Amino acid sequence: MSLKTRHAHPQVQRDWHILSATFQRYRRGNDVSIDARTVGATFVELQRRLGDLVPDFELLCKAEIVFQINQLKKSRNVVILGHNYMEPTLYHGVADFVGDSLELSRIAAQSTADIIVFCGVRFMAETAKILSPTKTVLLPSLEAGCSLASSISAEDIRELRRRYPGVPVVTYVNTYAEVKAESDACCTSSNAAAVVESFNAPAVIFLPDEFLAGNVARETGRRILFPVADASDISTNDPDLDYTIVGWRGRCEVHEQFTVDDIRRSRADFPDVAVLAHPECAPDVVAAADFSGSTSAMIRHVRESGAKRFLLLTECSMGDNICAENPGKEMLRLCSVRCPHMKTITLEDTLASLERGIHEIEVPTEIAAKARNALDYMLRIGRSSVRSEVTATSAN
Ligand code: 13P
Ligand code: SF4
Image (cartoon, rainbow, N blue to C red):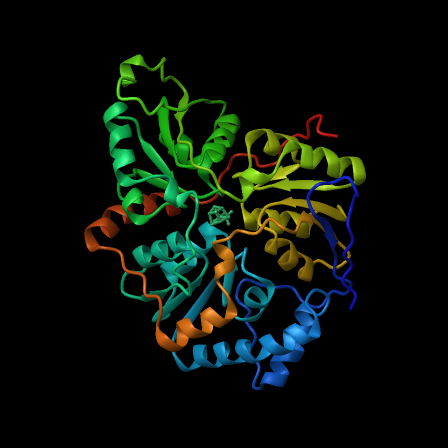
């Protein structure tokens, strides 16, 4: 097996690995699941796509499940949407479309399938249901939550509106339907700054990711304030709200783990490394990186960049998925940093989901109608026009 894995530095407390694939086997387009007639042919195709990264014995076990899923898909009118964080055999073997939150929302809205199986987390499946209410939307695991989505409730937003009357509310798509329903607009990491600026408002409430809010404030030149949870702290006590983002203290439990020190140590060991940070990372981490963007923007950046070695500050399965398509490029990453929610979506659960129609996602009609307005706003804005490259600071 030609997978190269080695520890990068003995003093590094966390487990650095370098992954690279040797041969250009194929490029995962946005609509290419495996169409093979037998389990054997499925194994051969999986090996062609992932042979550098996944051992043969694992591919042999998984080929059978991949084959069954792809057969079932054909016999029903099913589309499988896979977030970029899905494990490699799911991402490269059964997903009909892969992408970031914005891309998958668009595909869900346009799909002509009767059934959408969402290989991602619950808020994504809810979004698909709201955008495609007549379709059956299935989520393979009910454990697929999100620390950001569970950090805020609809009542929290109503309280903020009472405190800051007339201030528009933008919520990150990583929230549940009832929170979206209380919002003026949703956004994803692809278009957060553009959605905030589209209101042309002196102040915007931006929820619930404290770090994404900080990064948007930095990009747009706004200052940020976090209201304290104290009933006496009413809006009249807040300082002047001109050109302000009002944030919330939610965090992604994956991206909050990355530090500027991780970047500094990687640059010390590998001076040629290109550092890519997801905008859910802390603002000082994003400022110390060479590029920041959504998961799909990071994938495109690796494809198009002339660099040979990358540090990916995001969920670690994405490193495998990128590696399979970019032979000769090395991914340096912290292998232990997996999203505990995304990883509950397995091939086995995806098969069970298709076979038994579980777990069907429903959103109450009234909430769905209000949340739809906020999502439609997000889809109209598209990708952010705000520059995503950041200037490397003195991290090295
Ligand atoms: P994007 O794929 O939209 O960048 O989102 C990343 C993420 O954390 C989803 O939960
Ligand atoms: Fe939520 Fe973070 Fe996991 Fe994405 S990676 S689903 S933001 S906890």
